[in-house]
Image 1 (cartoon, helix red, strand yellow):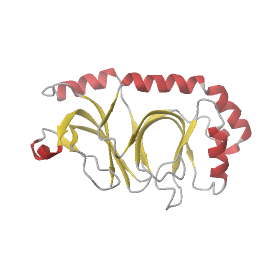
Image 2 (spheres, one colour; image 1 turned 180 degrees about the vertical axis):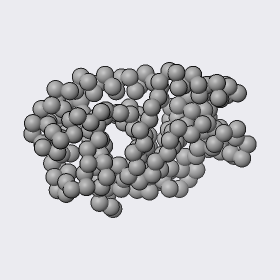
Image 3 (cartoon, helix red, strand yellow; image 1 turned 45 degrees about the vertical axis):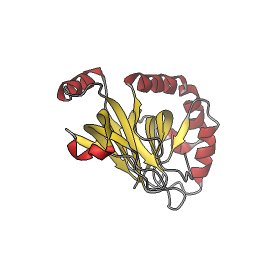
Length: 204
């Protein structure tokens, strides 16, 4: 996603590619990835009012969350589907590497799952816990993860949960999740009725 004027958070699976020195070639890369079956380009940060820099990701979306959506859950199965889709898109990625030297240079990068955000004043957090009324945010057991839309209105619900990561602007946070870790987190959050993985996004 490039030149995005809506604030989003996301879980995205793929390989990173440095974009500091790409300049106008970033537009070419965005077009080429868009034409590659099964792949998309994620560029974090504000690329409407600011200049892209740092790392982007070539890969597959796991979950995309608008700041107006409120707390949004996903599962390990969602990540596994994205991983499978990425592997199925390997031929397209290899073809892209033959067309673009910048992609060829990162083909040995290990694909990972990332928490990320983009758009104006973007912030996203990842939590394992349960939905919680914003009016009771001072009563949480763990950390209250809030959601705010682009009108700067707070969502009536957030999440009371264990923090697994947080990003703002052009940050990327590698997420290491599996059944064993969720089981450990479940033990830690044993008082929760139905703990899940949640993304909370703020126009911050």
